[in-house]
Image (tube, rainbow, N blue to C red; front, side, top):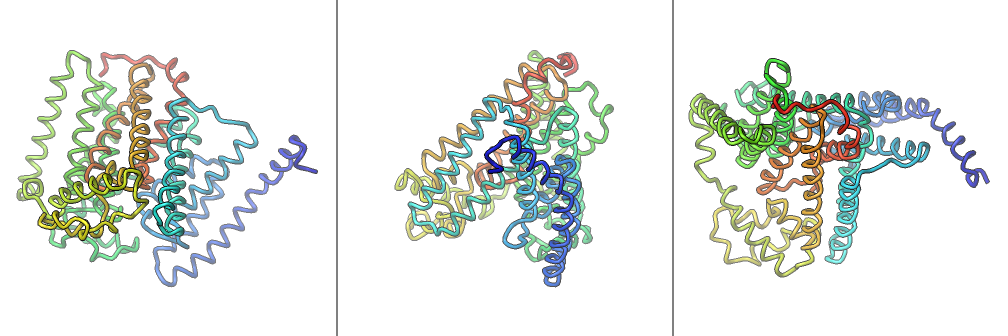
Length: 490
């Protein structure tokens, strides 16, 4: 009868919650035993005891757990421990704390934009499951995809929930920038051909043969501490506009925040070193969008043009210093680049035959034998083994017109909420974050037009940005009445 009385029930749960330290210690010893066992096969799992040690700290201050999840996503998201990536354990643990906190303290107030983003995400999850089961996707694959999608949703929810105020927003955003800057530094050193920074990947459990190109400068599709250069490009193309947004709202920003300025330069150099065309173009467009939004209306055109010229000059100088490597990468279409044509055509034809979708990861079933007319395109072999290499076409093929509509609505409400913040928020730092996020999402969308990531394509790093945006939406009224924004400082 205990749980029929709400007051007694809450008191009982609180008493259990006080035992969290004991449970944490027990969990540490259990995982030490497991990690010792698996570490005999591969040293990459030896970090787990350290990871579990942080659980005690997380129980006291969950925001630290959220921050601790960032390097796991950036550096270890491709590893599997007992069939789940290490960062998943942490996110699930943080989500458990969220559920307990909500039960004990009541409901959280969610802004209409955040609420719509969550409703769209949940609808997409159910639609993806239904279509995949109807189309005969193996049940185990449906369960795996669904759990992974839920886990990235939890990344965004925990980010929104654990950031409470502007100070914590600063701590989180600076921590995110710091961790990606470490990976960017490694990437630049890899580009310079320093073997230590390539061998560092072996410690993380990556076979060096998986790296594209082995010459000094042709080892240039650098991955940093990510699995390979494509996710690294996504990370950098998102972070570069965010840093620039934080900096650009301040007058003489380079002198006032040298550390962030250096991080911006380092991340931009690493972005160029990935030689990912779509990521580089997306990052540059993201920077130009930030510059446009932060400038006074009368000076926008000139300042955007001046930034475009400065970036062009920088890329020209770097191209000369690297023996025309950047120019050759952009001027010579590779088989990977040319393969996008048959991939896009194949994706559209699949959609016309299956307007409600074919289910997750089913693209290869409709391979080259279904599209013989496309076989003459260079790189057409990609049709057999990959997806459409376009975020929107992937969703359209896998989950049909309704899935694509949900994705468009997802971005619509995200951008609408951010532009509302941009126009009406008076807090200088928050305005910079909002502008930076607009640039980040713009850059990310451009990059995702030629690769397979996206909020519904299981990219955990992207959900940190979505979570930050939702926190800003929820705190709109609070930030609107805080420190005035001086337009002259832009």
